[in-house]
Length: 112
Ligand code: 5GP
Ligand code: ZN
Image 1 (cartoon, rainbow, N blue to C red):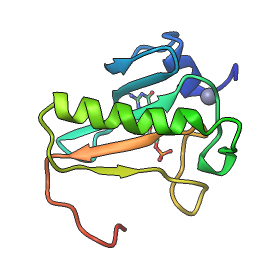
Image 2 (cartoon, rainbow, N blue to C red):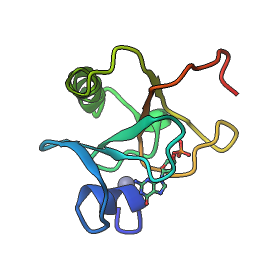
Image 3 (tube, helix red, strand yellow):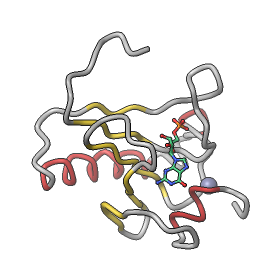
């Protein structure tokens, strides 16, 4: 999607601090970290949010979770939280599917 911020980041058109990359997935540190470690994992192909996941495009989501499992181990993270905000009320500000990975501090439940 030509005017999508995360499509541009995944394509390298906007700089980011890369954590991981392969053919279908890109991970990078959040510009406004909410925990000592805070990175985002996105599909390179544009999907608007979890609400746009279908049987046809869902494979990349399993791959994203395999990437999260691998990268967190490489970073030595034993405890972390994975979050995806969907829609305005939940606080989604970028309309390209992304999973936040947050670690390095005590977390509360329920989330705010
Ligand atoms: P959302 O609010 O949609 O759940 O999450 C979007 C996230 O993207 C926010 O945590 C925000 O800090 C991050 N973000 C927004 N713009 C940029 C950017 O240009 N670069 C990076 N690395 N993160 C961004
Ligand atoms: Zn996009």
